[in-house]
Length: 261
Ligand code: PML
Ligand code: MG
Image 1 (cartoon, helix red, strand yellow):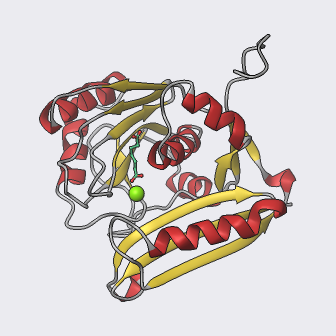
Image 2 (tube, rainbow, N blue to C red):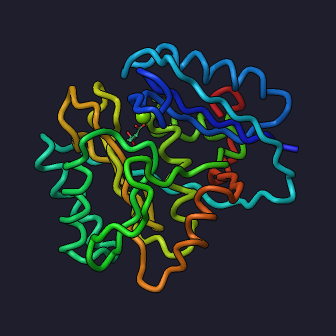
């Protein structure tokens, strides 16, 4: 048995009562690490750079191992850009390369940039027009029930590429699940953490990070998933929310030196 652990935290009351979204997290873990996972999530909600939560919802749900699908982790590339304008221009080009229509890429970037507050989940948009497809409003569609299959191997794999922060760790897992979903062409995301300016475009071919997609100090972030025409939206949303998925990193190189491996 595995356990889906989900946290969402807000300040000024519960999300449904107008509280400001502070933090959210998702894990899919074994019984051995369940208690520690819950504690870490609670601590995170209480000491977040977006503010201390006064409402935290923690859900723990058993998931039978036979229900879990596996999918490959996306390869990661980082692109240094000088500022937000340059970052958004290259992100737009990456979306178009993945099959998002040029106009739809512009509409999607504007939709994220025009948010009045952070989305807890993601917007779904038509990859031909950029028009929003879901009716989840300010909540967005929350991708849930996913984790990395082997955390230590994942951290080694990330570290070997110079990546160590929690934003990257979590975002690659989420994006890898999203790219395994039926009908998704690409994802655009930038962080809601005011101290974190990076964001990314994910496509089925990989996860490309841009060092500036949002101005420093802004606490408005979110995600938008561009979806192919004729996609069954109910099926897609059910997959994103409910299908348990574990992400597998590439097998490690065999290494003679056990210490550095
Ligand atoms: C978030 O955690 O708020 C989203 C993070 C997006 C960017 C992660 C990265 O640096 O690749
Ligand atoms: Mg965040």
